[in-house]
Image 1 (cartoon, rainbow, N blue to C red):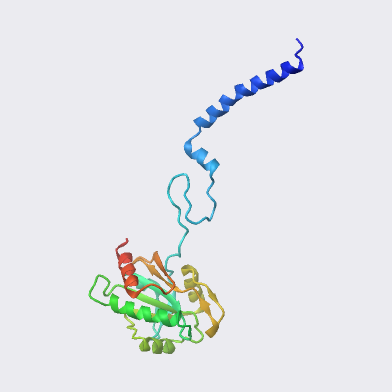
Image 2 (image 1 turned 180 degrees about the horizontal axis):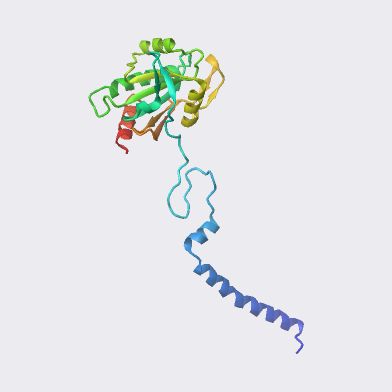
Length: 226
């Protein structure tokens, strides 16, 4: 039987309409997660995204405090693993830093924080502040000792340290610390990283706009977060 032009068009339309329900049924049978994944893929490396599971994905923070060998302001060599057992606040600075809003301000805040963690609280005898130089060629242990004395640093609570290039590089990398320039022209990321008693990262205090009381409180929270 021969079908004219209008007949062929009607036949094609009827076949198309018959196929639509099949496609809709296949879509309805697919799992919700599969449809969501196809409609909204999660970008790799995106910050704070919400995948189909409904759970927010936070970007990775600094790594755990690595076990490296350092030298304190008294010339004593130690490994960072010996600081475990209490919360640790890690900061980077250099003694020639002159910009008032960076290293000098940071040192003042750490000095006041030291007084708070030395009081009879849950942090007493457990918490440590670790300040590591970014200028090891200049910041020798004697210079770090002088810098600490001028700011009232108690070596039992506030450790000013230097180390070999490999150890310092490993520490900066784990903490996500970035520097630009050298010597008195150096700039770097300000802030303090707080670690739990087991050495895992807890929180970062950005810049220098936080108060010593706030840092002491975060260290206390880190001590309890196990």
